[in-house]
Length: 111
Image (cartoon, rainbow, N blue to C red; front, top):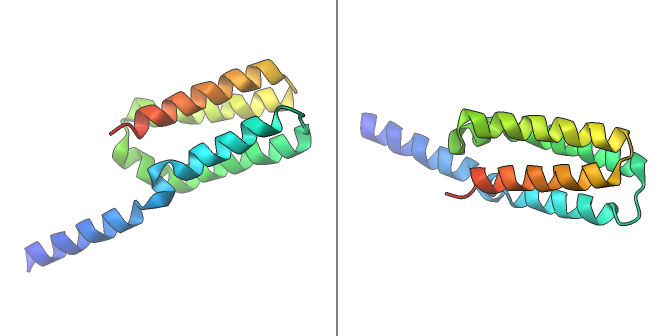
């Protein structure tokens, strides 16, 4: 009986960690974000940055399962910095923060 429950929990956990948690959604969002920087519409970029933060918050528990505490906390800081650079309308800093966010995500999903 216990083995069945454990197996069921493992299946639910693995199905909950499908494509959305595989990082693909985060990386696609960052790609679109970066494309938008070529001819920046700061209002749209601000919306996209907020959506990235919401995506992080929605999937935080999944990130906690696959990354260590330092990684997902640094990711949160990086997303917050990204939002701040967009508010300042600073293209260079925004590009650098996108690169930092991408590197943190790659570290989390490198397993």
